[in-house]
Image 1: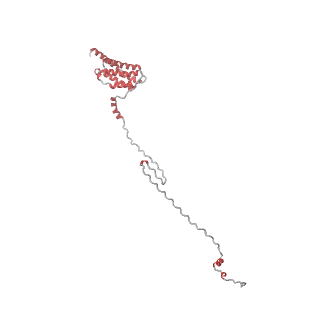
Image 2: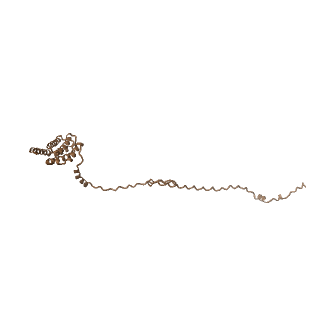
Length: 241
C-alpha cells in the first residue's frame, strides 16, 4: 500500500470512528421516541452508516461495507416512518454499530471476520418489518439462567373420581335381569315356571231339605199300626137268610 493510500485509509478510520462516537446515544434516543420519530436524529445516524459504507467500498473493505449497508437499510425504513423503532430493533442496530467499530479499529483483518449473524438479523428486519428471535449466542447464555430461575412445580397426583353407581330398578318376578354390557354377552337365564294356581276347594255338599212330616195324633197312629179286628170278622145280614 502506498503512502497516499495509507493516508486515505487513516482518514477513513478517523472519520468512521467519529461517526460512531455518538451513535449509541442517538439510537437510544430514537428508541425512546418510539412512533414519535425524530426525523433529523434518524437522518444523522443514517448518514453515518451511509458514509461508512461508501468509504469501505472505496477501500475494498467488503465486510465493513456489507454490515454498514444492512444497517443503512433498516435506518431508511425508520426515517420514512415505515418501521417503528422498538427495543428489539434498536438492540440489533446497537450490536451492529459495536461490530462496525471493532472492524474499523482492526481494519487490516476486517475482511476475515464473519458478520453473517448481524447481517441476517438486519436483513430480517428490513424484509419482515420486525426483529427476529434472539441470536443463538444469546440463547445459550440465557437458557441456564432461565432453568435455575424456573421453580419446579410439585407433581399433583390426579384426583380419583369415584363413579356413583345408580341403583338398579327391581325387576318384576319372572323376568330375567338385564345383562351388563361391560361384563360381556351372557346367555339369558331361562325364565322360572310360574307356579300353578292352587285348586279351589270343592263346595261343601248341601243336604236336601228334610220334608216336614205332619204330626199324627197318638191314638190314630196306634189304630193304623194295629190290625183292626172288625176287618177280620164276617158280618151276616139276617134279612138275607
